[in-house]
Length: 255
Image (cartoon, rainbow, N blue to C red; front, side, top):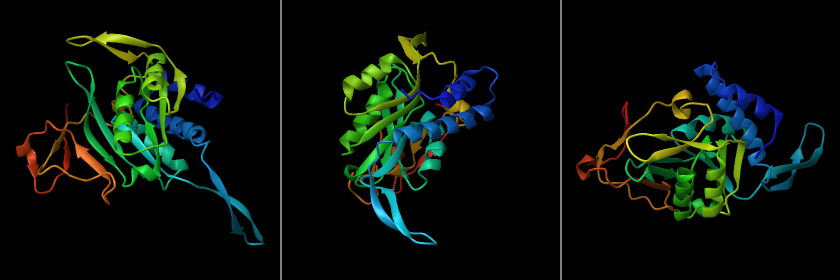
């Protein structure tokens, strides 16, 4: 857990019932930037010669794998701008997940990352880690594509979710700004576990409305992980008739 006075202050404001949507978005952005400073603390650097206006001197630059930011849609998008203020040249991928109505297991509907994942490091963002199911699944999908050097960054985490990540992916460090126990709520079926953080719907509050993704083409994308286009797929279960010669995603206004 990242222990910092500014993070504690901003998370308290984030959870305040009087915090408006604009302030919420700004706070998520600021918290993500502060956390990114700690998440990237272990990056390797190398010395090189820098020419200043007066003389030559030794400088340092980040070396090793290129870093890719991967938000879990849709709430993870709210953390992207804050991280990219520190690393403006980093590439961004996306993983779309939803919870199956009956099994409550995560199902991926969209997956897109840059090419050659085996040569990259990845920072996965998901502001709230409750049971850890979605985050664990997202990391599994990344590993299946050949990715390594994965870090998970979340703002609020439940101990159950952290333990799930430690059990499923002991090689993936988890960075969080605060720990909070998970609670349960019901919705036409089994109780659904979630973090009782008092922050409401992260995706909606951060300005990303619910969206249903459907495909507008005749053939699914067949990009391999090492291809120039990068690794990409849409979930099976989209009717074949929905595909066209060129594929695309269209967001509609409801789930």
